[in-house]
Length: 550
Image (cartoon, rainbow, N blue to C red; front, top):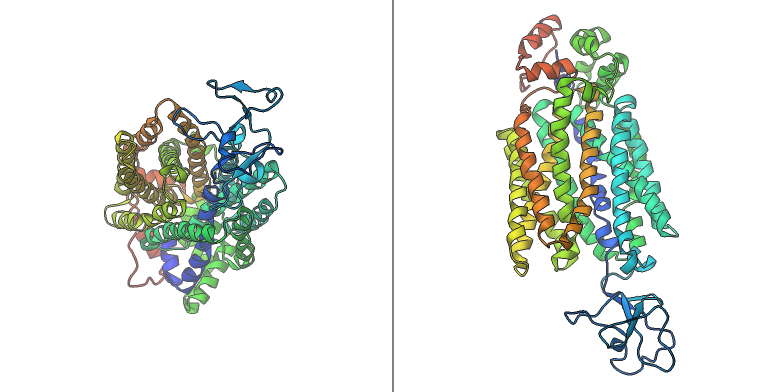
């Protein structure tokens, strides 16, 4: 009797699974908002230098007289003309083509507040010489996500999925709310880093807790549902940002609901699979009996006992004693192979994804519209990905999504800059493929790693994804060499990573491995049906008629 049989006995996909999966994925609506929040809270409105306080601006056109123009005739936003006047020019000024001296914006800036009445850029003047600080805030958020993936992925394998989710909900609520009241930029960055850490823990444990409570044939559905909730969150962000344009109010609005998530998360039931892999059969029995009662299978739950579980999960108890450490990912050949291949997939997906989605103002169209379009393309992309995942398998879906995304980005690099419609269409298509890749890699990684090290493996994969999201903005700086260089780099990496997928095994219809030995058996192609039949004879538990065969 394998663990999947126990899940089927206590109700399969019953009332408990439906309720807990819904409550666990609900916070992902706002996690999408936090990930790309700075597209709106750090938007850069049109701006120019503020003229001196004693300037006479009563005459029409007087303001432009203070603003120099560049070689293309556009008004400069970071320089101010020293309009001819009596006395010497302003200190530290330089001459500009004989049209008068200029100086930096010593009096601050004037911003166009028609679209964005308040952003961190306008509040703390993150423009001109300070413009790099704007990107620093997003990079520090991604550093937080990286740290959270490493720390909380490891702790979840030690302390359990439920405890980490409770902690992460509270940390997100507190740090996000504090960021909305930050008195200065350094404090804001610190709280954004803490938010990134906790949101990484939520993403990892949300997927794992749901997958470990679901039978084999429903895991792809759960993974796709999770991806769709995240996509709906992108629609939600566009609407909320349009309705609440002030950055502090927007930051608060996407953070306060996590207090509610923290409260109801206390009612989650810990993963019985994690309990069993930790050797805690008493808690495994209690969790399964609670689920059986909620699913209306109380009689089936009473048939379970410590003796039944001990015989059913004999292999897990004998081989899975103790938790594998993160070093096992490099020490064990089979785990090392998985770790290296999956790291490449995680890095490539996140690297190209954030290269596209964190520069919405660069498309030259309404930022709210492009946010909606980027969210809308996920719906058909993830549907196609789901169909491929369920019919052809995880490996073809992962390979195709990365390959197509890379091709779209590479083609976009050779399309002329003035073909904005074509370029935007290719970017949207590439983003959809990358969203499908994210959807697949979360499910694929969870199915490849054994239970004893699953969260650590997920955490390391997410860590590599965060490395990609941190490196991605740095690559955009190569546009100073040639405008299309970033696109060539963003496209080449996923194309190369798609080839790595061929080195991974297929997991379609396969049971989740509980131990490293299970994983190695799968890698060698050793069937588990025989083991399953032998254990089934030892423990004659009833199985439902619609149950999947291992």
